[in-house]
Length: 277
Image 1 (cartoon, one colour):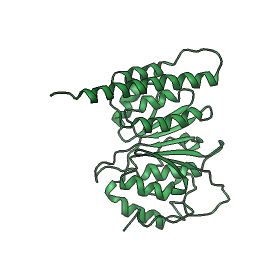
Image 2: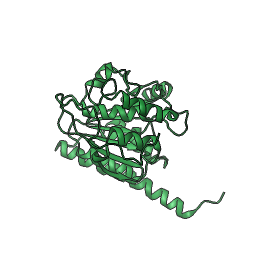
Image 3: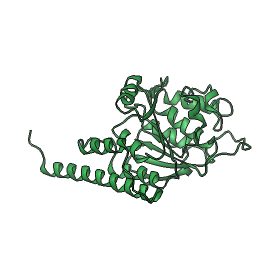
Image 4: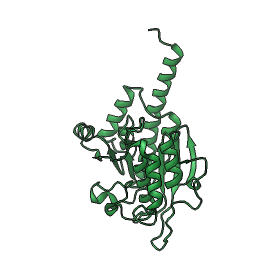
């Protein structure tokens, strides 16, 4: 098969840009943290080798840059929670090498293989019980349970809401997450778990933030799909949307005080074009 020279040149340019950006990013961050020169950790080198040997990514340059820019300015140590194991897993772990990055995947096999190959990575698997085809049913259920099991401020560890992820290790729920990325689980078919639960969980974790200063930056990838768009509108809120880069939506969600007894996630009701029963 004859290869398109322009496509090859573009791929090489993109690969160079990603590698160069990663090096500049780490150098800038290390200089800001300490005036002394220290060698890069092994997992940073692993990421550089990984991205130098492949041009396969699930995100565009603009999407990668959007997340890395927030990481660059995140207070130290930065707490970063990532739903999904993707081609960018090593990148996120490396860019936040002075902070804490936790990955949540849907496959126990892939999580164990990741930890075996990269023991410095903290990852956990979750058995999702939802299906993308159940979006409308679960959306209606969450509305009915808004003042009870599916309220916006609560300890998810003890939640019985069908959209709540409550089976992670206990200490995960005590972390003040500065950034959350929803890029999993899979949602490409009706039988896939869909991302209703991670988006709902991200909204609750941000509003129920324990300690820590400032709001939580929540990123949702593939915002063009119904599940991601509708759930983001409902649980992260359009008022909190600060930018959209290609298929990546960036929300900034503030902590809700314990004295605030409101049962709604958003101050405005869902836009009528976003959801139809």
